[in-house]
Image 1 (cartoon, rainbow, N blue to C red):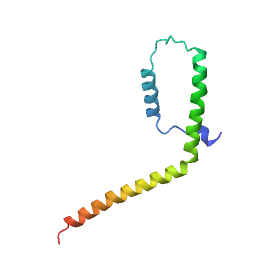
Image 2 (cartoon, rainbow, N blue to C red):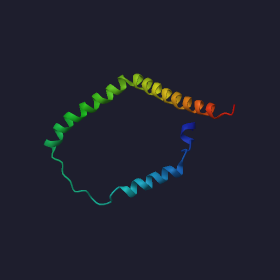
Image 3 (cartoon, rainbow, N blue to C red):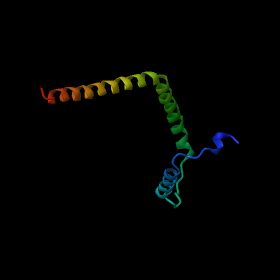
Image 4 (cartoon, rainbow, N blue to C red):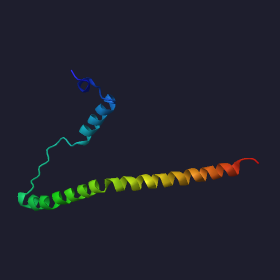
Length: 94
């Protein structure tokens, strides 16, 4: 028996609560709906390539996006910590 098969979930109560909330949110009555295949075909032909293009673009620029976010976060941290440091220095008794 492998280690993966014996591993317990980290948050079993949270998982159970999530299942209960999802089941409570789902309507339990039948949804009587009909989707015309002649309508869904063109919709699928437009939306699927669009979804592929967006995900491919995000995958291609993933490193640049992560680098920009890290740079922005670093700048914001420097700005906030710098303001705190100056405030603390001005409040020190001489």
